[in-house]
Image (tube, rainbow, N blue to C red; front, side, top):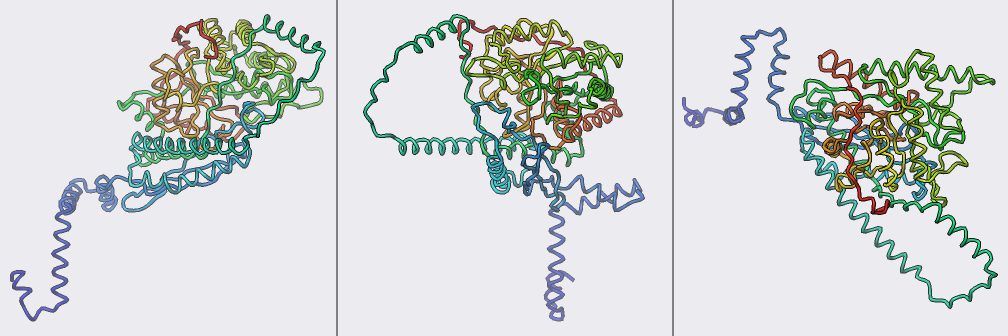
Length: 584
């Protein structure tokens, strides 16, 4: 009987007719979607393969045909970093095979420095400011950023980072306009009425003449240092942008079932690579900076670096033994019993020294006791953090309490240090960014034997990408931090630009560091020469070392582990016009 005849039969109930129509609609729906053909193909293929688990076989077969996952929402949460400071964490939720799932969690470094090592002109990074920044970041994540990324696929990293960066630029411009209006309003409110000028106070002129004589004498002996450049503004809530960007990358890697470092490597270089290297670790063993109890300020970090050619595990174990031997020697030298247990917030020994030679000698003595040769088995680096040591009234660097050096004298001090300790192959932030002439002099003096790296003295990654001529040509490379509005795409573009300039890049941590170990994956995927994670005594830092050990084991099993090559100090220096003032 035809369909028309079937429906025309008065003896057929209404329910039967409706059921028959429903079946017809279902058949048409499945034919149009192609699922019938897919089922037929799957069953035919399964007949030949004859799997034991038929349902599992069909599940895997149709998983390949399912729609790609898309982002449904972002969830921001308050967490605390390794210094106990308030920070944020981002969860990414995606629709995966018609179900919403939490795919990953991510957190990046906090941008604030401890108040007692902040720049003199910077306001204190107190709990109120941090709470406001976190509250703003959570608002951004929960509403505008969720709407911005909703229904996008996580593997669209470039596109999503572009959306995030554009959002940040709009917020930044609006904030600057708001601050400018407030400034203008305050100026109008406090505009004082003109008052008659006070008569000059009579003076004998003796003090003025004496002061004038001193000033003239000072001008003859030393030239004034260039003024400090204004601090780059940090937009409240900007940490949301960097955190979301990292979370998106982790989500894409998770959904692809590949490690994050391989996903990052594929983003940077689409062509498959046969080998990946584990960066050489720069492990902080001693801190003698401004926070240390002794007179010495110049050595915020004394860093040990295993020699190239070793596996990461071999180098890591060597530095652990070195650290243990240093502690043993310090305890033996203390008449009052063990006195070497103090640790810095960087996870290293916090020691009291008065002279630069003392911490370096301690490392060398410990290495000798372990029958290691400093300069062959282990190299050293020093983070001077010179920008934190400037006394602007004196115009000098206070390298130790009571000992101040001009920028020119700093160059002499550092060159002499490298001559006496040739095992030191890297200086981090040896001078302020503004002392360009001295950077040039130092680079020319040591470029063949020492890396000069800019970390705190360098401008932010966003600023450098916007104005590449701001990249310090006098530096061998940069220590990059993933903070604030820096996206994964920004990191990729920055490392590529540095490579094109024959400068190296180092992935480093901030003082406020989360327990998220993603930075280790970033360092491997981005092809960093070094990774600077701090010491071996704090969980938020050790977890990153542990991740690098796991990555190395995985690459070794796959036959894809490369070893670091010998140190090659880049010669990239662009001649500068010496006639220009150093502060220009």
